[in-house]
Image (cartoon, rainbow, N blue to C red; front, side, top):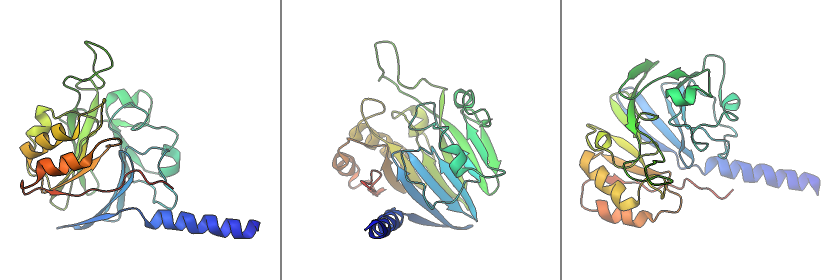
Amino acid sequence: MKFVAVLSLVAALGLAQTSWPVQEFETSGGVVKITPIQHASVMLEAGGKVVHIDPWSSGNYDGQPQADLILITDIHGDHMDPKILPKISKTGTMILAPAAVAETVTSATVIRNGETKTVGPFTIEALPMYNLKRGPAPGKLFHDKGRGNGYVVTYGGKRFYFSGDTEGVPEMRSLKNIDVAFVCMNLPYTMPPDEAADAVRAFHPKIVIPYHYQGSDLSVFEKALAGSGIEVRILDWYPKN
């Protein structure tokens, strides 16, 4: 019975691993594979290199490759999780993060809002991500401007945007030439789906994929972008395994 139970567990884990909704995008440098892990955690593979974005131990990393590059957006626990870093790191792994994160993850190389760095085949741009009006108390914001980073990752001429925790700030709305955008939407910490859709219409990526959306009604987001010419892809970021 114990042997059968082990086999069942292995089968379940195998099913979990193959059920990730991997997305593939053609670029001039070859295919970019992007795997949703959970919530705001993403894995990007291209050119034989692996990038983990906001890795979090709540996600399932079993069987996933270790990172050549790790990007961390902010200090909150669903984005900065020091416990997972040894599991997904190897000799030579580079971590890019804002200064507030580097106070805890001391091995990180600091990248600030407005800075650009090249790491292997990737160009990494750090963008502001912050609240305009939402916070835990009057006069306070959940995310202050300058503390965290959103990122644009460019590979093979394609630009992939990861918003981090933000509202529809001017820096998001003024983005140009974004091929694929991963945009957050959850209350009370970021913004609701209708505000997210309004910001997405402003910078008009070719494809938008909601993430960090737990508890949100994504049909509102889809309807608000209907007829815009922007492809909306809804993926499951909250697997129940």
